[in-house]
Image (cartoon, rainbow, N blue to C red; front, side, top):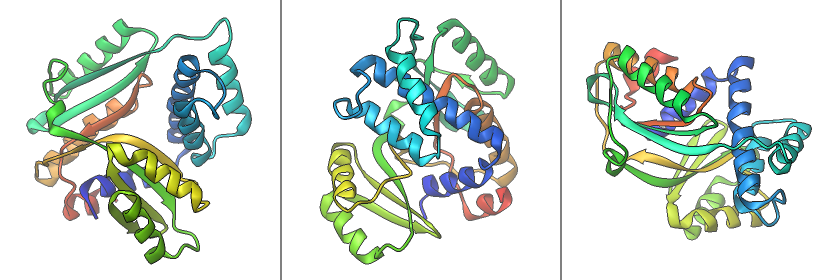
Length: 247
């Protein structure tokens, strides 16, 4: 299993609490709002909104919450979010890339700078670390009654680079340009992804001892708990020893 998938699996296990689920809902709602505000409130004609709604359903968000978020986005009192990113180094030289949606840039900058300072990190300039990450399409689907061999062949034909099975979860990875073809193929097969997104996957990873790695992951967790931050990516290698220590 790749390091990205190990980390995703650990986060799914740790994120089962109501508090974590609530934070995930908050992030999804913000994505729905900005998507609807940009391209209108009809998922049939707004691909970004359609994807956000799909991810909301995959996270078991109630339909009423989804509809309220869309109405809020297209209403006269809609909140305006801006998309910004931050790049820097966590302790021990681990590269970190954070994507944000915020309605208060000053608040977000102050919060993120404070986190980097508190945990011994170093906040860099935009674009300074982007080269360390590749944009990949990541699809997570439930392994329920599927013919894995058939599905894997279909996904490879549609452009998948990796097909990873971990218990009841299948993770499909593809190049950015094949995101649409994978989405289309899953739809043709009647399979709805629990989550589908373009993510930043490190093109090289750095290995740390378990104690050092735990300190880095504590910093990553602090960033992920910030309501203004949508996604946090890093290049810490998730070794078997580290994964076992986190379970």
